[in-house]
Image (tube, rainbow, N blue to C red; front, side, top):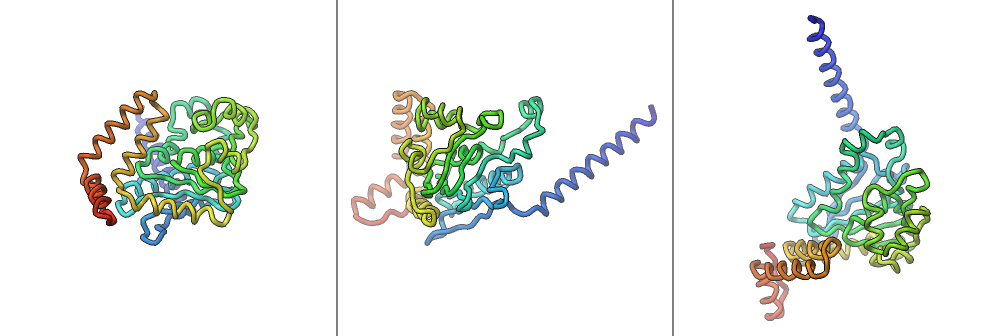
Length: 287
């Protein structure tokens, strides 16, 4: 009986040391994203996924860094829009399969597996995906969590999970249906075939297609145009559009009308209409 305290103490010390080793390893690991403020007014945040040797495979560290950056930028009043991009070869070629290979049902079901992935869709500010190269599996799901997708002409989209014995786990089976319809979503998810940028545009997945070397710049320009609007009203418009995915038409129309009514309680609505009548540029206060 007297041995238990010492055993517990040794185990506790081991856990602390293990945690310290893990934290130290994380702190010395290369950063997997790069963040900078861009545009003429520096009011657009550009997040670049930066794991080139792995084609930006989405490992835990990368997703943690991305989630932390998005939460921070969402609170940054100097930022009006966010652009997420990768490299010319890959936006993100999928989740890190090596990291998932030994996972088991109990730990994934009861744990926090993929918890950080929802942050992209929870950000209140507009998020634009500038996609070049491969956006496959989790990479495609991250792109589709964004509010707008601009694609380079050589971009490829798809859900190849079926080929490795699993299914999309971060929205692939749900967002493809809402954007492109059941039949096409079934084809994408059941075959794992890739979709070209032009076909993705035709199916409503992508907003616009540009030459490879222009897509990021065009996405930043779009971000600047959005950032010039009232931040408060932009967030309200984004929320209204997103609700269209979740509500019936009548419920959505009611929600939209109530938010429209709510704009009349804001200073920015008054300023916007006054500036229009006076033929001048509005000065937003986000109030």
